Length: 274
Length: 261
Image (cartoon, rainbow over all chains, first blue to last red):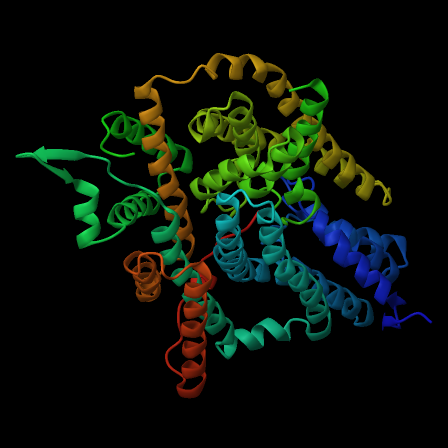
């Protein structure tokens, strides 16, 4: 027996599974023109066809969803679910404001990307890299599997559940979270974990050190040992904060990389850093 | 490197590079993963992973945020690891190739992003003319073409790499080695700086200090997992308190208008 998500438009559970898998392809041809727009459209195209059986309506629906689109990819199925819910409603109601569909898409992709970036780039990727790094440094082949598992379990779950939530709860969902302040609270709490991890990783993994030694009246004087006795791992912190302030000044990543490479090269040659 | 190994390497690199497009950013692009493939094909996984770990640190914070081309850590890290293994010169040699490669490929990416807009126009025209069943095939044709282009570029580089690695396999002079070592250290700090710039907010600084101090002053007694557990508890406590007593609305990264590619 076929399980229906929406009986009136003959949308089955299988259709939703298909959206889930197609959502992974969203950036397969990322361009500056539509960004992920075409990727968004192909993911829901088969459902649009079911909703709009008339060719003229179907064409308009395709054109709606071929509009430029861009957001963090993992929670994007949420918007796909919402879009489908809105298309269904549009079919039922007369004089439905079709522009609302794209307006909602655009309105949601900004804040959702903000949350998505904080979670997926800031925290989950950080944890995945951090946990895998220790293994990789020992040359343990388990490292890439740790990284992929830690990152992808949340990645897959987010895609699957946001699609269902988006369709079932529609636009209410995010609005509700936002007005109750829950969304910000969750993001902030995730930020706490992210920042604790970031601080820890800089101290554990970032290896800037000073090999300078002096011999004062027959006694060897190692700068790094003195530094460590006052403030261990001070040099990595200072370097990171300098880099951070350059980023905040709006320097491009290419420029900063180049400047750091040159300064590091000169300091390394002089044996001040190394 | 045999020709077959080069073809396999180029295919693996193209595969890792395209995960963002084909597999929804599942992070095959990270140097820890790319170096695993290099090690697998060249028959030295432990050594390749050690080099990959160092690249991972340099590029820890590089994030694909916003609709622009990003530093291509995949191709850079991949080619760098190959050179390091083949020449036997370690991470310093790897970096010498990886850094320019990642920047050149970033530039190339922005060229593709522009040029492949052609297919977007084609799809628009098709739909306007009532051809609805070609959207998917046109889209996938463009996607395959991009993989082929990546494959060809990497293969071309690998074909030239025997000469490159032969030239450097006699070792670097001391000044060059020291210099590259210093550059590597400073660049590894930049990765973390990028990471901070994604997450940092004034209200989160205390938590950064906690994580940093625990790791730096305990002399390695706490590892990532231990400190992660403490971080999780802190976040949990904050969540409980905020739910119980309300408190002001926190302004977070969620409010920032950052778009993801």
